[in-house]
Structure formats: structure tokens, C-alpha cells
Length: 303
Image (cartoon, rainbow, N blue to C red):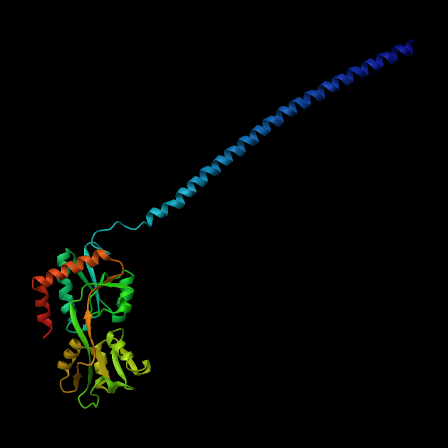
């Protein structure tokens, strides 16, 4: 009997312990579940916050990326057609009398006076940029200058990359030779060494007569004439008015052969598509011709 009672008591005690342990385990699981939920909420909140921050950063970055687009927007048209709305930049080669040449450090001549008159009509200040003749087209296309005024002949290949004003002067190429030369016509130039100013219609005319091996280019017509006098070339081809000027300076050594080439037209050149400036130049040129100002300029320099 005593043993039976003890066994009963022992079983009851074990049952209580098991119930207590079950209660502790259940409580532990409940607390863990609450903790997991809290952690999950925290993680979700962190992820949501991070996503929002990322979205904000992306929006800010997009705005920052878009900003330069406004900075590179082309400036509003000033109405002058010139790079600087206060001035007109003329490109020339001041070694082409009487159209452009130097008197001291000043560029003077037909084109200089003509462009000064046109700039005045346009209400602009004239600035003259003197450079190598064959550099003029590049200077025009890259915006270094607004207009070429350099005894510049209208040619189809040039019209592909620039626009020309109405012609303002008719010229022709002339052959310059030494006084004792046997060259008398353009036909005598075959296989001769011909001096030209690089990039001019004198060069293009020479290329139609002989191979490029027989053509020597110079930075100016004056240098080509000096080469002729030193017998480095047999003849020089250049526009008639500069030819006369060089002839007057060297009456004892050189002579001219005229009437061998077709006439050509001088005009002012602006960048391709610059209709604003072209229209203004043509209007000013027409006014100067109508009121006699143009003829006065020509008479001043072309004798």
C-alpha cells in the first residue's frame, strides 16, 4: 500500500512538471513569434525606407543629368546673323592689292572699305582678321569669322560649303612673265613651272593647264612674283588687279599677258545657311551701289 501510494504521488509530480514545461515552451514560442513579427516589420520598414531613398536618389540623379541640356541650348538669335551681336568679323588675306593690303599695321583696300560701309549700315563694328588665304573657308565654317571678303571668287565647289552675296566685281586671271620670256599665250604654259597663290582661282586655273608637279604654291601673289624674278618659276597666274599692282612695282622686270581666261565674279561669303546675315549684307550692298558709295570705293583703289 505504501509503495502504491508513492508510485501514485510520483506520477502526479511528473505530470505537473510536464505541464509546467509545456507552459514554458508555449510561452517561449509566443514571445518568439512576437519577436519575429517585430523583426519582420523592422526589416520591411528598412527595405521600404531604402527603396524610397533609392527612388529619391534616382530622381535627383535624373534631374542632375538633365540640367546640362539647358546649359547647351543654343543662344537666342540676336537678329544680326553674327557670332557677336555688336560686331562683324571679316576674314581676309591682306596680300591682294588693291582689294586688301597692309598700310603699316592697318588692312586697307576695296574689301576693307566696302565691309566698313556694310558694317555701318548694319549698325555693327567691323573687325578684320588677316590670315592665310586657304585658311579662310575653315575659319568661316567654325565661326571664327562672320564673312569672307578677300577678292573671293564664286565657284560651284565653294557654294557647296558657303553662301555668296550678290557679285560686286568682275575679274579675270592674268599671266605674269619676265620681260624676256618666250611665253606669249596660255598654250605656252604646258610643262612650264607656274607660281600661284595657294587656294586661289589662279591655282585652279593652273591645274587645268598642267600637272600639279609643275605648280608651286605661295602664301601670297607677291611671293610668287618674287619667285618669278628669281627664276624659280616660269610664270605666275593671278587675278588681273593684283597683277597690275605687282606690274607697276616691277616695270623693268615683268610683263602681263591678259585676255587668256574667262571672267569670274567676286562676292562676299557667309557660312552655309546663314540667311539672316546674307540678307542684311545683300541689302546693304544694294544700297551702297544705289547711292554711289560703292563706285567711290572702286574708283579710290582700282585705276
